Length: 158
Image (cartoon, rainbow, N blue to C red; front, side, top):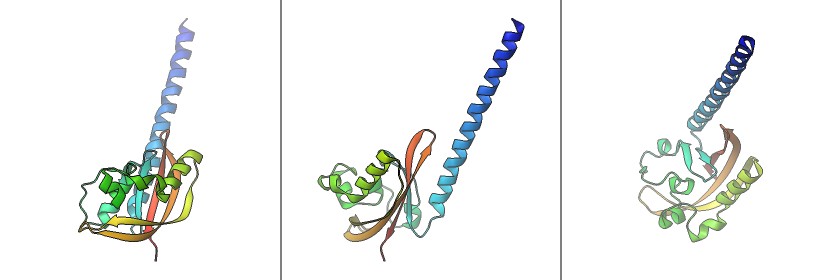
């Protein structure tokens, strides 16, 4: 009986150590993504979940004159005219045909990266004036814990 208890305790210790190692790895992966988001100062970077909620971004660091007053959904953070006017990115009439939303939806479905997606967006500037902007969008699919995410980079086309 004592041997059984010792074996059981040893198994539990191995399981606990394995879980702790897995959590530490997930934390390191998340920290690495956070560093990548914030060091990319030539592009806007967004870490988004499957609902396009922005978990990390460098957008406001690069646009100090733009208020951080929008919901943390990708289109709202970018100040997309359709998303802001409808209240929330994804709820406007034009959102169903948005190329950025479509490529992200497909990327989450297929668990695949994408690159060089070109789109024309209508964004509000710091003075809340609509501007037409041609952008290039790249995305890298990843998991944080067991949850799918994309690291999305948006840059103005030259």
